[in-house]
Structure formats: C-alpha cells, structure tokens
Length: 513
Image 1 (cartoon, helix red, strand yellow):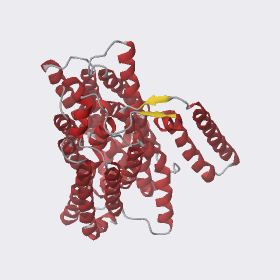
Image 2: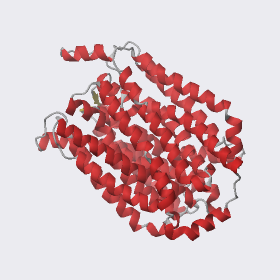
Image 3: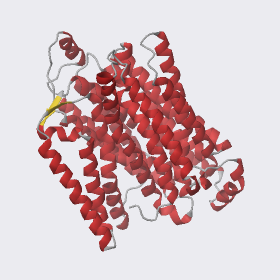
Image 4: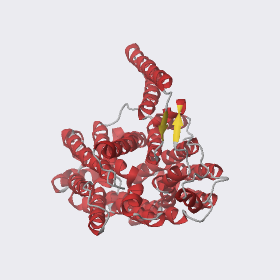
C-alpha cells in the first residue's frame, strides 16, 4: 500500500495533518459555541456555520488563481500565517456582546482566507508529485494515503476539544456559557506551528512541486512532457470537471451535517451516558488500537521478510492486549458529549482506507475497477443510505422544538442509542472514501495543465456551495418531524447519483485520457 510512493507525499501529508487537527478541533465545538456564547437559535447558528464552511472551501478558487501566478509553495506558507492569526484571535475570550461577535467574524474571515491559500494548493502539489511517469499509476493510491493522513489529525480533534474545554471549566474557572470553548480554538494555533515546522523540515522532498517564477524553466519542461491540448480538448475537460463539481455540492451539503444537524441530534436526542463495555467506542485510545490492528494485519500478509511479519504480529497482539485490558477496566459510567461523535468519521477513514485500497487493487488486477466518476456516483448512493439509517433512528421521536420545550421544563424526552449515530458515520464514511479522494485525484489528472490551480479551486468552490447549503439542516431543525429532515438529504443524494449515471459516458471518456 505504501510502497513505491514519492517521499514528498508523506511530508505534505503530515503538514496537512497538523493543520487539519487544528481545524477539526475548532469545528467539533463551533456550532455549540455559537449557541452557548451568543445565544443563537439553531437556524442562525447553522447560517454562520454554513457561511464559514462555504468560505473555507470557496476561497481556494482565489488561492488557486494566485498560486498559478506566484507559486503553490509561497501561497501555502502565507496561508498558514494568516490562519494562525485567525485562530489566535478566535482563542481570545472577548465575551458575548458586539466586541466578541465582531472579533469572531474577523477571525473566521482570516481562517477562511488562510485555508483558501493553503488547502487546495497543497493538494495540487501532491498531484504534481505524480506527473513523474514512474509514479503515474500510483496517483489514486497516493491521494487515498494523503486523505487518510488528514483524518489522523481529525481523529484526535474531538477528544482534544472536549478535554481542553472541560479542563478550562473545572480547573481554570471558565464556567460562563461558551468561554471554555476558546481554549479548544487555541489548540489550533499550536497545531499550525507544528504544520509549518514539518513543511520546512522536509521541503527538499517536494520543492520541485512548488512552482513560482524561480521554477519557470522546470514548469515549462513539465508542460512540455504533457500532451498539448487543443481548445476543444481543454473545453471538454473543463466541462467534465464542472459536471462533477455540480454533483459533489450535494454530497458535501449532506456530509457536513456531521457538524450541524447530526451534532444537534447527538446533543438533543441521543443517550447522555454510557456504561460498561459501551464506553469503549468513546475512548480514542481504543480506536487507535483498532487502527493498529488493521494496519499491522495488512503488513503481516504483505511483508516479504519474516522479521517484518514478526513485528506486525507483535503489534497486533499488543493492541489486542490493550483492548482486552480496557474492556475489563470499563466498569463505570461516562457522560457522552455531543462533539465526541465527530471522532468516528476520521476513525473510519483511517481504518478503512487500506481496506478500500485493497479492494480496488484487487478489482484493478481483474480489470474491473470502477472509474473515478463511477466511484463518485456510488458515493452519492451510499450517502443516501446513511440518512436512511437516521430516518429509522428517528421513528417515535419528538420534533426538535417539542424536545426543547420538555427540556425547558426540566423533563427528558425520548432518547436513542448512540450506536445509531455511530452506524450513520460508518456508512457516510464509505461514501466519503468513494467520493472525496477519488474526486481530488480525478481533478488533478483531468485538469488542463495551465489551469491546475484554478480547477482544484473549482473542486473546493463546489464544496463551498455545498457547505453553504449545510445551513439548510439548521433551518429544518425545528417544527418538522425528524424523518422529514433526513428525507431531504436522501432525495438530494439520490437525484445527484442519477445525474452522475446519466453523464457517465462523457465523464469516463475524459477520465480515460
């Protein structure tokens, strides 16, 4: 799985891991922070949340345009600095009045713009590693590994956000609504320092992908090795990419409900405690042990030496030992905080990436691997299935407003098992693995050489529109029955999948070039 990949992949992946850890630490509590600190209702909190996500994914278009002119590496560095300033401002507790609100909005703009310079351009650099013919057939696998590394950072983020917030409440005296969340935002500042340190420490392994005026000759040489595209071929590629962009809008609209309506569901309709063995999924250490078992298991069967097999076997046994020990220690009861559910998606991404890569490698050897556009279409179907689970989970529950009315009286409405959400995140992750890394790989492969930065920005622009539409979940959260809320996302995902299948011949023709 990791063999034959360019060294620069791992350096860029680790740099992105640090940045994503900070971002997801913030996202884990951001919607709850808006409601606690500023007293916003679900709709307004969802509007701000959606607008922020929109900017985070829209501004890579501007970042891509700037990078095509000034270089990808320069924009990545500037982006990290701007993000750091935004997180630093957000981490300062300035209260819930006008000053605090304005400071938060300025911080969100800085974080969004910095991310726009950083995120897309770093991924273009990853794609540029595979312009070398000896790595060309490793592109999809490389982006899967890169995507997995992103989610390693995201895996630990919810636990970090909860633990630092609880520490601020219990030991530092920050008990006012929303104040403790600022400490979770401060974690992002530290993670960006780590990210930029990794980037420059290993820059030598990917410097040739940075672009810019100093690399004009190497860029020209790179373009010379690629087939020259006619205006018609360029148009066909851009149209194909725009068709894919149109579809992924609705995937991200549904997927990023994990930080909004699914978090509301976790907060208002999911059991508040777990006891005994049921506490194990909420301990990130247990999840890490499962990841060790998966990777060591693959290593055992793929290793070519007895020494490597022995090491893999010992890792599996040690990880199993930790899980058994933790199982017998799990005798008490723990509180379940809503943000903790956001650890399951990155956990599934990291744990399932080698599984999905093995499946597609097996299909490729048989000549049956689906094309990237077909994987995207399947991802939309899988996302619809995830919300079908939520529809079943919501049977017999009150509307959000009815549940809130009971809470105001000090009464507790009906709650459901946390395993409904855990299962939903599992299915959503299958959809994500089919769509997101494959989509990014598709863009890096199909984009006309002159417009790589712009087209990668287009991918994030589509994601931005989807994230803006995330706020729909907040507005639906009120008097409507929950099955209606989830039904909206089911219908949109199914319609998007049908559109992809209708355009499949055109997309696969471009993908085969």
